Structures are given as structure tokens and as C-alpha cells.
Length: 331
Figure 1: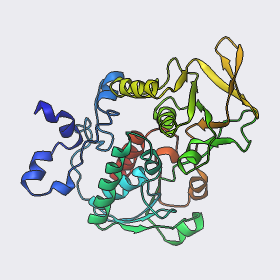
Figure 2: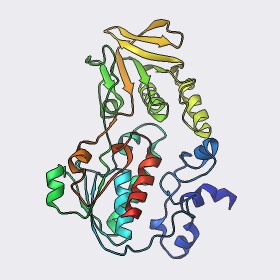
Figure 3: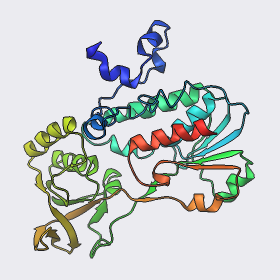
Figure 4: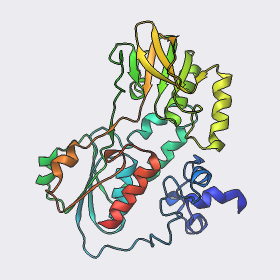
């Protein structure tokens, strides 16, 4: 049993489901350590990044059918939207999910392109399989504005529209050799020397640095945090550092990227002294900004309106999935 601790955290019914021949329904632990070890390290109570009922069993009873079937419209097919659709459907609601792109998964699809992060695709695969299994009506390449939502006459709307890409407001950020993390993962062409400015403090900067260093770029990673990857759990942080050091990535904590010019960047230390770093390309790692335009267009115009995940405030995967499950439980 000790050897399957995290497996049972992700899926407490793992043995029963195997005995009953329901192996395809098991949430497979991806060993991300975000909500189990990471939460124990910081706040004490453990959970699971994609099983939010774990650790909340005393607050969240086993799902029961809703007293009244409702027409639920979920906008956004990332992990939060998928979880909201899955839970609402299990409660007996008639669920329709709209995703503006041609595939489900949201930002996790980009994250999984970086080294040692492919396991996150299992979360999306499980969520997609469960929503399709239970009959959620999934519409891809479907972007709805407020009027289109209202025309469908939903009883409840869950907005999971995520975060829009955004760069920090600093001199030189609009130059052609400056990119966001999303643009890099989408295939932007970078020069040999790359400086990454990290305002995230988690995996975004470290994963990009590892990806680019593996591709042969000379990489410097700059962050104002006390150490690079300060918000990554310690169990995951150590092997990341080992790999970055082996790849020759220069890590520059306690400094913030404050300006960009044609030859490189200006970084400012906590004591306000500055120095220059040469760069052929610059990558800006921020969490973006909440995409609330649809929320503003629907506020006060539908019977029930829930906004979850990055569409409300830009955070992490755990919060998006948790809020998707909670929203569906409350409908």
C-alpha cells in the first residue's frame, strides 16, 4: 500500500475499479507533486491536482443527482471547463461544451511540449474520455459571444475562457525579437542567446529554459524571486535544478528584467543597481490576464453564471479543476 500512496490519493477507488473491470475510469497519478507533496509542504492538507474531492471528502459528499435537470452551457474546453462539464453531466444535467479551438486541453497542451511535462496530457485524456463517455455535447471550433450564449437559452453558464496572453509593460517589450512563453511554444524562431524574464516563479520559466537549452540555445533565466522556481515543490525542484545546471543554463535570481534593447536586456537588482545581459532573443514568462469579456457581457443576463479558473484570476491547474468541480456541484 505504501508503494501506491499517490496512486490512491489520485484515485481512492483504484482497487475497486480494477476488480470491476473499470480500469479506463481510473485517474492515473502523474507524479506532478503539485497538490499532494506540494500542498503538504506549504499548507498541510493534501489533495490531488485533478481529483479535488481528495482531502475534501467531509465537505464534498459523493455526487448525487440534481433535484432538477438544467441546461448547462460550458464555455472553454481546458481542464477547468472539462471538469465542470464532467461533473455537471454526472449530476444529470444536459451539458453542452464549446471550445473555440480545434482541440480540447487549453494551456496544458502547450505545457506538455516541454521536457518532463508530457505526463500532464494524461489529465486531459482522462477528462476528455469521461466527458465523452457520459454524453457531454462537445462543440469544437465554436467561439460564442454573449448574444450567441443567450440565444441558446441556458439555465446555467460556466465560463472557463482562461487567460489571454500578455507581456509585462516595460521598455522594448514590443520589439520583433521579444516573445511570450506561449509564442515560443507555438514555434517562434529564436536566436542563439536567449534571456528569459520570469514573473511566474513556477514551471513556466524553468521548463522553457530546459527546452531551449536542449535545442542548443545559450539560456539565462532571470527572476526577482529569492531563487529560481521558488514556488515549485521541493521534491520536483531538485531534479529540475540538476538538469538546468547540466545543460549550462545561467540562473539569475534576485534580479528583474526591466528594459530591452536591440543588443540585450537591462536587469535591476534589489538594491536598484543595474547591469546588461546580451541577448539575440528575449522571452517573457507571465501568467497573462484573465479573459473576462464574456463575463461582463453575460453578467445579470443568465439565471446562473459561474466563472472559474484563469477566466476569473490567473492561477494554476489545481485551482481551475477545483473551481470547475465546485461550480458544477453548485448548479
